[in-house]
Length: 231
Image 1 (cartoon, rainbow, N blue to C red):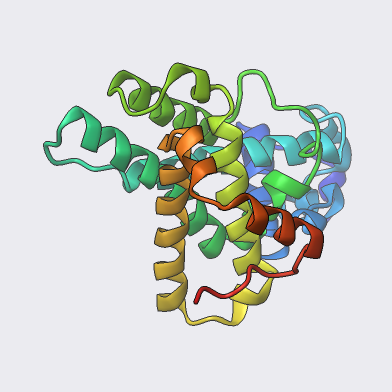
Image 2: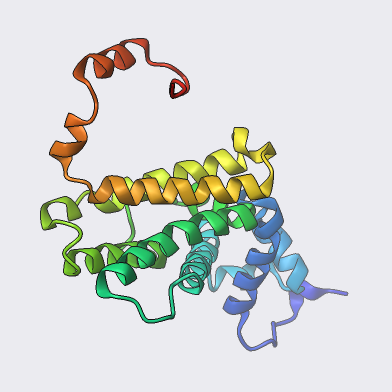
């Protein structure tokens, strides 16, 4: 069989390349994606792939964009559908975004690695931003409209929320939480998201007053690897 000499007749090679990329990265992460392997699966030449993607990184970016949409779908599936007050709906919307993000990372670690560690993932936030980021900012805007989040704290809130849930997801995938029972992780994930929401909404002044200054200095000086246990 001389597949390289024949044109591809599927009708949408670009879509087929992305689908094949999704397939190989789902289990193997970004390192599993190679144009040679993808084109071999489709029975086409590498030259045919280059008509649609300039290089491997371009295909990986397209795969990542598709994965981002699936992350957003996961978030949307957790959104409340019953009647709630504006404030409760806004809170549940942000909660669904956080839990949906963590849930996707746990169920699809290969794809999660693609969107954050593959291709040009380390570069500046894309324009327009990916769907999960838009879902996060929409939820935060809903909190502002509901009067729960002040406008001056809205600007930094996306990064506070994102960094917290992303860090938790990394602990589950690669860190000490990867060996913890699923039900325990479910509980911890809910506590993490609820704590982040409470922190974002709490007035900064009241948070500073709740932590004694001496304890703050001592903790900074010791720089413990893990937070000290509560007494």
